[in-house]
Length: 234
Length: 234
Image (cartoon, each protein chain N blue to C red):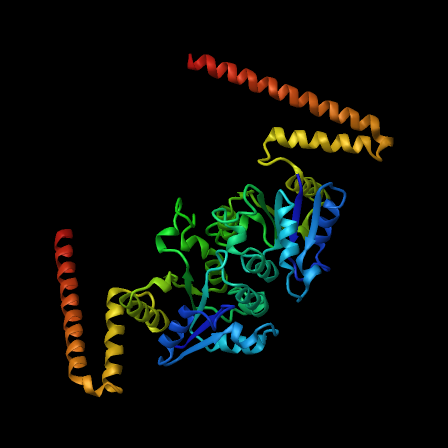
């Protein structure tokens, strides 16, 4: 699966959030970091090149800080230029059909502020409706947005969690069920074990074994529950 | 009351909808037509000049064709540049506080397409949430959007109706109750009667008289209903 991250951030060079995300995805296979502001500045967009990138991707991520409840202008310029009706609509050429559209957005408020009656008045789901509508029109699967709240105040533990969540958002099979998360985690650890972590081979092997056993146990439990359910229905 | 129409349309010169709206507002007092694409093209925005215009307005209208469920990029560039947090937030300098924010948007689908299960999947109210959230944050009153659906297919009668609806949206007291609409209509007719419609003075006077009588009748009816209600509550 190939993932394209379309980054929109007018101050991408000064953003610690974007620097963190850029580093987090750096080692991943089949992931392309594509920062519009860095590539184009105020130059016109190369529509053909952008479409080739899109055509080659299975998962497309719009990544941006939330400015006035939307992406910064550079993403809107890109949308208006690249996504013509003919190219995009599922009912026409439909080049984006069956691909996935994800949103990674950073906000300057706690997540709890995005609710009726709270300081931001609306939920992230409501604010993202224009992107969800685009996905629908294009025949894309819309992914639940990954929200990064007040990154500057994050603890080291929260940052580690974000790194995992972000890598998973870019590369794991969607939707991210508990089972899917574990499978992904095991894959990552196996990659680490086969790579340049030779010194910690034994510890990694143990963690992998532990997770795999846990996953087997979980599947056993699920089967038992199903058996009980079926019995009750008899 | 002063109204500022902030128009965002990359092809404003070729748009028959915008041409119609421009003509419709041309004779109105205290209404300013302000087309971003015409004024700035690809030049940087004069933030100070824009803020002075905003400061002098009581009602601010964002007027645009709906591109990907949002305004064209020129309005987002303007928002990101002009509406700094300090200038805009009601909790900070709050320069837009207590002003009204209206939306006039033209769409290429019938209004019925904007609903769950219909071709556009979401309602106009849902699609406009980013603007409503902006209004809330700025302490502005958000007006129900005026939607112009498939203008190109409009009959002459529909166009006459749009002209009245648009002029009212720009100048009548909000919210537009039935009574408020009638009062506005009488004002407009009086202006016509006192202006260059001398030839039709008698007809206009008759229409005005008819409307005023109708409004008196309506008020009488309302009072009677209130009397009946109060009696029931006794």
